[in-house]
Amino acid sequence: MKMSKLFYLILFLLFTGLWLYIYIIHQTPPALQKYSDITSTQLKTMLQNKDFYFVNVHTPYEGEIEKTDAFIPYDQIENNLDKLPKDKNAKIILYCKSGRMSAIAAKRLTELGYTNVYNHILGMHDWQSKGYSLIKN
Image (tube, rainbow, N blue to C red; front, top):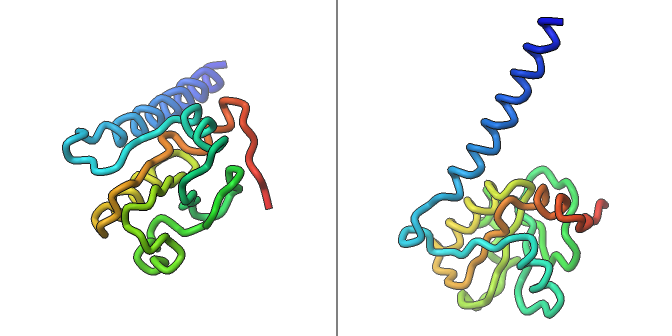
């Protein structure tokens, strides 16, 4: 019985720690962050009248949100600039599984001169928790 309680306590602490970590990494001061965060609800609305380039940056590939234009691993952005719009003012929305990889990719895109970059905060986890589906290939 004690082992079971200890297991659940450790599981709870790991889960809480993970969500705290995700929360903290998304707390970059707005003055330093040159991209915008959007929620799953905002993204769902934006997809109804899609006017942006939509990129899945999660690696390894684990599915995608409808109307995704490209899959570019978050740590391979510079090697795949040919897959991105040539216009550095084009609206680009990035997503991954939790929001961590897409935040890294969004930061890198702004460093490369892209000015209209959005990060889907909390990613595909949040997307599915809202009842929206993923496409699995």
